[in-house]
Image 1 (tube, protein in one colour):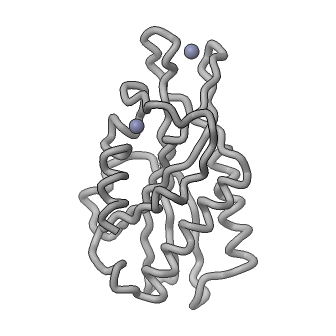
Image 2 (cartoon, helix red, strand yellow):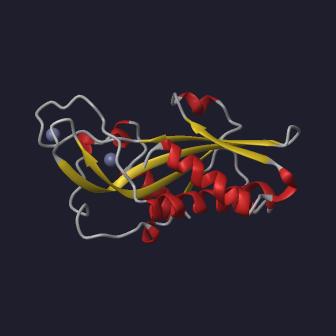
Length: 180
Ligand SMILES: [Zn+2]
Ligand SMILES: [Zn+2]
């Protein structure tokens, strides 16, 4: 599913169940990865399943489809922003595939992902839970909540994975999941 489907799901859920204090929340695309210097943002890293296709029509599935959400609330303005980055994968069958292809998630997974994201926003900004206190802490969805499937659960092709290249995949995910 495209960014647009995440956006419309996000808007739809918020329309039915607005966050407290009448704050406005927007989901946008995360264009660069230079967020680490900005401490006002916190990150939710989410792992889901997606199916992929390269330019030569090879198809594959992966349960290591990583999504990063950067979240920030401007309390004075009553305006919250979420910047979303989906990590792609290269084709393992094409020699020297130099493009990261974005996976397609089912509408159910999009919905599930957005729900979890909003739950984290609620806990951090509105219920001020102590485990959400530290600056730039990364919230990782517990691994046992990753939607399971038969295919796509083989060994992870790290050299094809954009999230691995950005240190946003297996190691960091496992480490932070354990910590929780
Ligand atoms: Zn290919
Ligand atoms: Zn990876």
